[in-house]
Image (cartoon, rainbow, N blue to C red; front, side, top):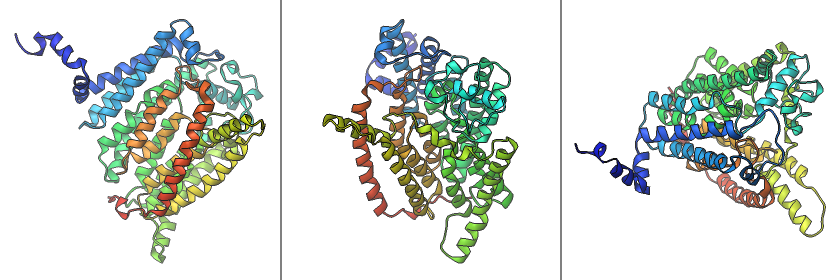
Length: 496
């Protein structure tokens, strides 16, 4: 008997070096099972040190290492994230079928379906927000502390008096989950929402990619097998997958020379996405461009944009109005997002710049706080940036512009979380834009959060604030050069 099966030690020796590992990751099976191993490690961490119903105080890498199973917890977390990120990174280079990608994504999700919340406590807040709505309160106007939520102790103090920063559709869904009167059932329903949203993405992303002239398999791999999906969206239960599934489905209906009913329906689906997470409303003007095939400053071009783009916007606004009235929430949800910026973290560039300036002032005995002012200035700049991006992409690829608009929101918002990167990733995955810089950012962001949801680098907030501030200066320079460069007309893909 000869061959690899007869000499297992020879196989192990060949895989032991870097070249052997790269060779193994050049095979679809190697990528699939490496990612599955990473998902199992993360699931084990959810059991050992996830986000329990009780709140831990002063969690850091050091405190974890000093506690029970501390070394094992950190090793599993680092190994799990590294494996998932490496599998996603190497898999994007392979020729993979749609069926193979779907099976792989399912394998990476399954280990995280029946474990405690991972890398976030947001599902507990969702449950209490739903209980608030179920009790007859308006979560867009009052925080969950306004009524005795039976699970209030599981929600972080900073969010107890903050109005819900979500749209009416998500509030209705949280109300349904909480109506059973069981926190465990509510958490299970949030996981179900995430799984159904991933399934919807599996259908919507390839359809949108085909209509934009992009390989569906490439887009599907980038979106569905992104490590954010198993860890933060299934494990953490965040509603971003539902948001992006609705958005991708709406854009797929809008793309191409679609009849008017499809444009209205597509606009309604975009509106549904906004009714989950209001921040993706920045995509709506680009959806109008997509429906009209761009904006030409001629009589026919303006009429086409008003007719077709107006159908998309009208469908979105109509659905939002219906949901606002039927739910009884009114339109207060549209401004409730303003209360979400009370938390301070260096991951938000304007907040980081403020922290850095405050720290520098303390070196000279000054006691000012410039964070609120810089955050306000950043929001004003965001409005300007969104208008500029839309205008520059009025005759280029609207989805490229929409992805940049989402990045502008992430970069200039008062609070930024790693999983927000999924918004631009989903949009840019169905374009011809090179995404290595975004892929690297996604991989780096995976290591910012501990398995219980606390920030991994929180004790180093000031040094990282200075680092991010330097990045802000670099981005400002790059943005100025980008403004002075033309947007190539060739970026517009052919539509069906």
